[in-house]
Length: 330
Image 1: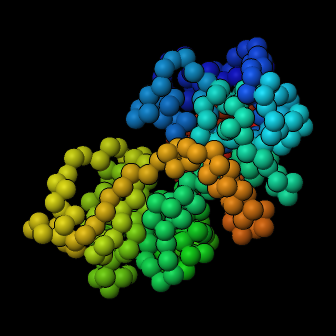
Image 2 (image 1 turned 90 degrees about the vertical axis):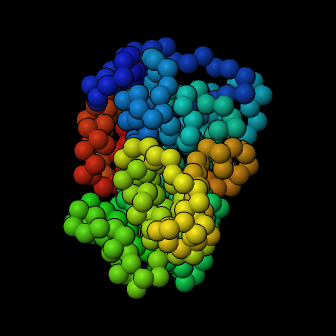
């Protein structure tokens, strides 16, 4: 089979297409022929050897959808021919075939294409988790979503509007501003044109927001804290701009000079922890798949590229100008 392997950390050219044997079937596992593979920003971080280093060599990828080819001894919930997806599992996914533990497999409903499943699963489950479990949104709240045209941000905006929140999104360009607006953002801040905190305070008439969802990290952390109203929640789920430096926890009390409003909370949320229970993971996947299939949650696919074009896929990922999901098609 074809597989993409990283021998040394580096740029997109570090991704090499090689021939490998098809993985041998094991008890409790299913052999999945991948039909569509989601390309995620964390894949680039793995390739670069950045904030999430993993051992070399490795085959990247955390998300794909395909068809079960074979099942190992003890597998009872799936059979050959079943349409399945998986996300958050690194089992050598940039490849024609992946051997996947039964507990990681998620059924794809007939109303959903495998492309939609691969493009939406990881991002939609993350957005669902953040808005329904980590910091549940309520009707009438104000929410700030950084990178509102990004893979997760675009879906966060949709979930926030479904909850009845007023959404402020931050973006880097006019193109992304239009994309965030289409997702449901009521106000869009282009952070190259005006400071985020000042813009949010102007929009909210000084009241601030109830919740901030932040995947950027270092570059937005101070602004995110500054715009929270009393009892507000800052949810961090990524650090694309770099690691957040240590800060004085007393700033959350509102008693420290210059700290602003108090009783604030800051949390780091990782989907892998909230989805650790297979039953929770299956229920969450079923919920987002149903919304996508019903047309109530929009998934935008920007590129579908052959597996051999993986370097091009990562260049598109790295330039940050693209909107929508990139898929590799084995």
